[in-house]
Image (cartoon, rainbow, N blue to C red; front, side, top):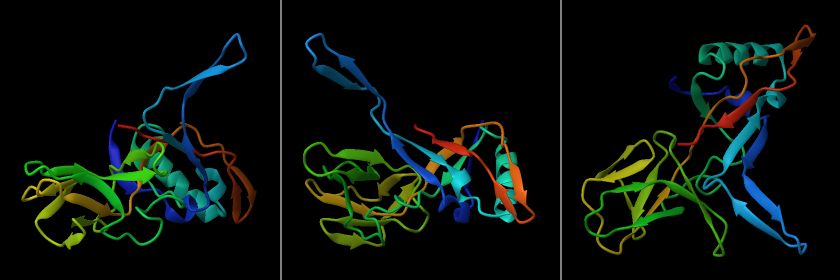
Length: 204
């Protein structure tokens, strides 16, 4: 088992369907009320890439990609056409608060915040796009003295105590095929219909 840091064909990915899922237990009480318990700390995304296949050429590209990944065996990167940026458009260094300095800490993981002040969800970002990350400390963007290790920002000098560390970035989703079989129907000389090409996010 391995992970291949290569992105699924982008033209096909942008026509796909999918999004996050949660796992919640709902217990019906004798009095008619209910109790709910969220079993997962983080959401998990599922996609169906079949909707993005528009031609025989698309299908041939997906088939080659599937074979190289050996079906479900190897993971890869996926571009979610709706959710791939720290602010929804072009990243800035002020998009996401990722931590507060304490004078000794030098590493801060990238996260993206969903929601407002009631119960926001912080999603860990493990696969930022190379060269897209921008970092600021107390509102001043830094162009040196920091580096990336996967989804972790590493400072050469610890940010001062109380300093607000913010980041902007583009990112991909680590996924794998959720099937070991492609069922392809050729509908015309230059077209293909694929009922389902399911993908599922790989959580840490």
